Amino acid sequence: MSIGRIALIFLLAQLAPPQPQRTGTASVEGVIVRLGTNEPISGVDLELTDTIPTGPPAGSTVASTPVPFAAKSGSDGRFAIRNLPSGTYKLVAARIGGLFVPVEYGQRGVLGRGVSFPLGEGQQMRDIRLPQTTTDANGRFDLNGVTPGSYQLYFLGAQTPGVRPAPGVPPPPPPPPLMTMTAVEVGNEDIENINVTINLGSTITARATIEGRQDGDPDVAKLRVNVDAVPSGVALVSSVGGQVAANGIVTIPNVWPADYRLTVQGIPPNTYVKSIRLGQLDLLADVFRIPTQVSGQVEIVIGADAATIEGKVVNDRQETSANVKVALVPDGPSRRRGDLYKSTVTDGKGGFRITGVAPGDYKIFAWEEADDGAWRSPEYLRQDESRGKPVRVSALRTENVSVVVVPARR
Image (cartoon, rainbow, N blue to C red; front, side):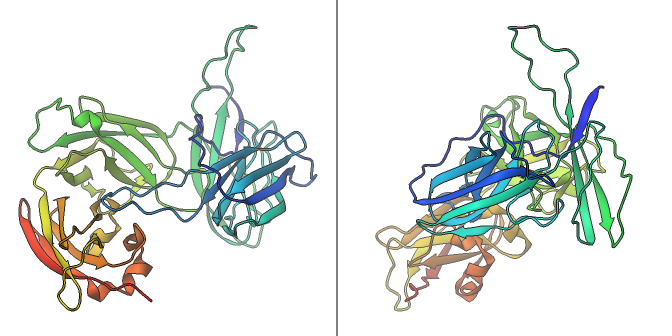
């Protein structure tokens, strides 16, 4: 396979997501320059992302994923992202196909991590400089300013098409990238002559079944398997996924070397993700490390023996509390499973009902005032942990509980 150059670059999505509505008055402006010469670089893609995601709305189990604001540097290397709402942001710059190392705002050294920064309403953040480096024609690179420590060095190879299309003929889709990762221990001396072999990323194959359903059940094709990257600060690593086919099979190609968690979306009502296994690996309890040392097919089972929790919420005077938020929070090690969190709002008589609950141990909380999804934060729960109502949920059972509401903080 012919490889023109090896580059450390950041692949942005080929189809850009819809841009969020810009209703604020803040702005971020700056310039992209070549490291060492300060020569401006045009055509660099920038993504500005709010680092504090919005929690799921009441009654939903899916958290909102921040959609980044996008921009591109001009011929003078300058960029501007305006009409931004206030928030805490992370800025990443990368030039697709330009053989440049991705760089984040505040990054110290090419292998370092960037920093997030607050942006207030009306604030104008100007004169940001983001230097980038490049490989030479032989794929050689030099990373300066790396502090001692343990690192993972990621490589992405851009394959060069063998034949140029004839004039007037649209070019074919770009070939898939090649990639690898190697661990590096950096001390007080230079490290030279790092040689790596890059290949296509790993391919994940999974089969999904729904308990009690026949093969080819139409609900199977509504499932989507997500491979969610465990946050590491590496801009190259992102979450991927794929839609399950009618036969229950999903194939997700070219997955970067990293740690991931598998999740499933689109499950039918009153069901839950019962198990995700690869051989003896329990991927609901453990991270999925790519490349894996275990070959085979991931098996996903959607459980049909879900339980129901219903009850009422009262205040300290045993009066019913209407229109307050109720959250079901998994207890113990299961608390890191985002799909097990559920929430609702009490009715006019303080009653609530939560369906599709996986068997296990939980705590139920009720708040007079709470931001949607706040209960997913350990820091938020810590102050009210003792106010949660413990409940053990058994398969196909309906549990009745009474919960005392946490009063609004004055």
